[in-house]
Length: 216
Length: 148
Picture 1 (cartoon, chains in turn red, blue):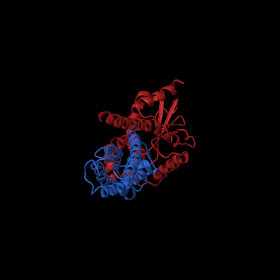
Picture 2 (tube, rainbow over the protein chains, first blue to last red):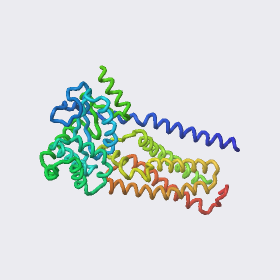
Picture 3 (tube, one colour):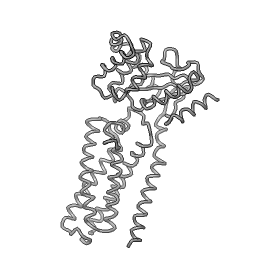
Picture 4 (tube, rainbow over the protein chains, first blue to last red):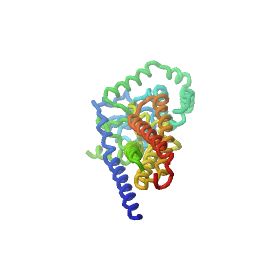
């Protein structure tokens, strides 16, 4: 009787393990092919928001959404890469707000642009990512952004005006359209020297890719 | 165990295996991508929404465990022929079906995006509910012991 149970449940257990391992092995392979990119992004220019050296050998362009949790998770990764490589790389930020799923993404992008008008795009960029969880779920998001502007000692009146500025919205929407024409469907999407990276999952992976490029 | 009960239990087994496969795939995907990207395609929206987790546990994992329990119980029933086993599994399907109704409601009216994998799970749990109700009725008069 005991033997019968061992055989039955032993084979059930083995079957389940094989099934799960099979799913682990075959499951993840479809991801890559669904990410077809149809073009190369335009080069980073002085008109873009860039940290690092614009003439560097390695240029990373990030299409990003301030309200996207994945972009928030990559923020410290990129920051560490910037600290490590310094002027050996250039990191450009382009807007790709997923407004259908993130209701404050466009306003957040506008807030960063408005801060940019007063020379503090990156400071606002950092604040937005560092506090993403706080403002993402808040209904009074505009007030929070004005609070950040005060924290960065921006001219409050001008910042509020710029939040409604049509040309800033147009700039963001142009960036979004550019992303769509490249075939981007999600954020963050990284391009390294014009080629799409299939999102490195860890800092180490990312660092290795950059180091290899620098040594080429 | 009558012939009908056996067929019902085999259907039960097959459907819970399918549900297990589906939910486990989603659970693996959940834990594989340490950072799931944000996209405008439906499934990612559903799977990365705040409703995809209950108290930090991914719904897919709960589904996976649910189907695994049913799978084990139906094998145990086919082996031991104890009605109590399949009746227990059948009662579980009420909870599974109710949860599925709630998740379909969330998908259609709250998240407003459709994830095909979640629809597969809703279908399997509905089939299991139907099979479960049939098994409960059919085993009601039999003694809960070894023989029926």
